[in-house]
View 1 (cartoon, rainbow, N blue to C red):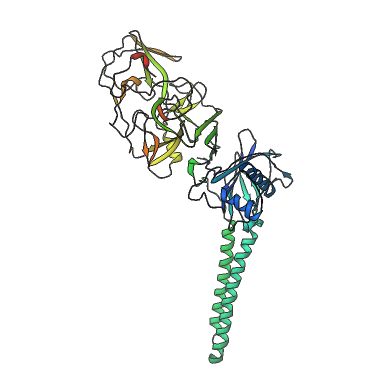
View 2 (view 1 turned 90 degrees about the vertical axis):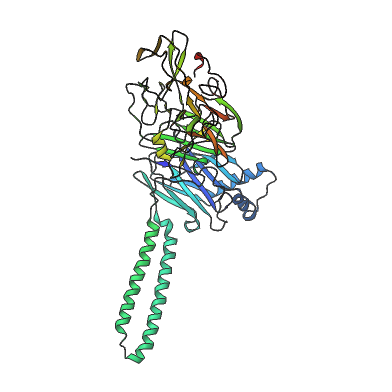
Length: 520
């Protein structure tokens, strides 16, 4: 499967490296509309050193400091396509902090190009400075390159099919350095052998010639090995299809999958995380349309924002779409399907049940009439796509900003149970545009088919009524293989969308069963 999953460090870096001024990131990204962005991320101390110590720049306020930084970047960054088309950097946006992020829009970028030169010497005065360059272009592999003193902070790349390949002339200094080292070693060895030969030949009447020949062969072998190693080191390509930033998916990243069409870009800036996505999954799905779902998957245009510093309120508030997966596909656990009874009961149908075929695939997902693919339960392919080897797999963010995980071991148990009762509805019917049928319910034991079959029992499991729990000292939500699968409420502050309501539960904790017409 040709899957290109790239995590790009556009914004905040890992706290362990956030104060290292020698480390920075330079990223070029082609957006879905064909426009280009340039993002520079570095420690605040790097800019302070360059501006104050190296450039003797003066500034009296944060706004003046921002202006000085932007001018410095404009003087030290060059992006040139096809050796003639120099891109212009405009509309600078800067967020100061321990981890400082600057974004430019690029203009005068050709629609197609055969080569690109990138130079970023903004931190050239910092000892052992190194900037990781990543170029995210639609249809291309996501290789990364290094800008440092060895290549004068500049690389030239050429297009090779769907890959950008570095022109090795930019690395001749490092090759020469290794070759010089090899020559020095050989000269020392030869000098030693010659000296020994002269001394010993006086005593052995030149009987050392075989030994000298062997020694000379050894030197040539060693020299060839050194040169070979030098070439090998400098011609190694960055072929990894996954490039992970130090801050993981809690920083800025992009998910681009050419096979499945996924285009999701997340940027971390200021106090929010912004996701722009076409909401196409980066993994295989079931066949759509299918007998239980007549809809076809299509690209969406969605923008989500999440707070970087979630505020936990402890109050459960219902949310129709409680969160979004890292690939841009939304979590929407409940359905709009209802079984209506002449006796007055309306039973809201759960997505995962055996009574009505809603066309769910192996990811517990299906498609809305708008073409939006969405998850109702554990998205197995999503978990596989983002599995980093730990038990807890980070798979998304809730609208209140708290992370969403899946535990491969099932470590965290939900606190919902089927109510010990029977259905009371009579003369019940289920209808949708594809079918209409009568359903007999009265007297049957509740079996989990409907939302109102379930009740939350505090303390009976590890998770609260929103399927949340403290993980390593911070609140988080869990997607589970058991009901409610995906929490239907949130406990942090968030911007409510659509209708409002209570957390989904069959019984209120310690209370009575809600009326039949109050299903979700």
